[in-house]
Image (cartoon, rainbow, N blue to C red; front, side):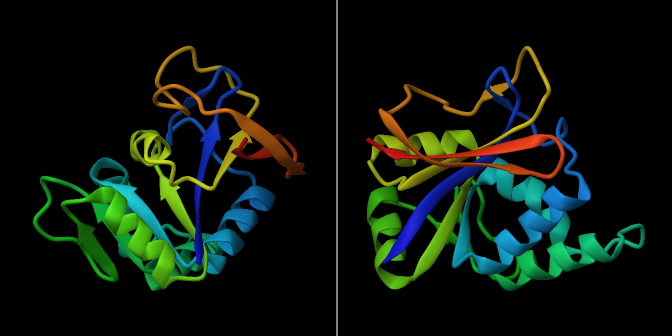
Amino acid sequence: MAKIVFAANQSLDGFVDHTAFHPDPVLFRHFIDGVRGLAGSLYGRRMYEIMRYWDENHVEWDASAREYAAAWQSQPKWVVSKTLKSVGPNASLIEGDLAAAIRWLKDQYEGEIEVAGPELAHSLTELGLVDEYRLYLHPVVLGHGRPFFAGSRPPLRLVASDRIGEQVIRLAYVPA
């Protein structure tokens, strides 16, 4: 059975913003290896449209960026959207009963399915479907933006913490 994991970069004051965090080489390697190990990824429409950047090769990419793109392109992706009518390569739309669709994914796959985006993670949290939360804390204070937890925070229990690279602490929590 797959485990649903919500992982995101976060500022010290609790906000997520994909433009505010630039991983050092060690953290980027961690993300490459992490994507390679996933059973797949779950996206809401907005985050999926941001991540579509990795569907095309860009001449300015270095070897690590190309490696990340290859890993991302190869994995299954599921996109939760009421407005999209189609999605890109290796992606499927989830429409209708979100809880039933995620339970089906959990039953069909082994390993980790990563949720991207706090709003989708909030919906899955409300349904009791997130198995682990991974916060990558960066030494940045944003003062505004989307919070990591889009709604009320569930009771959590810390299960792991480690330093990745020079600046980032990863905290892993499970529902208590």
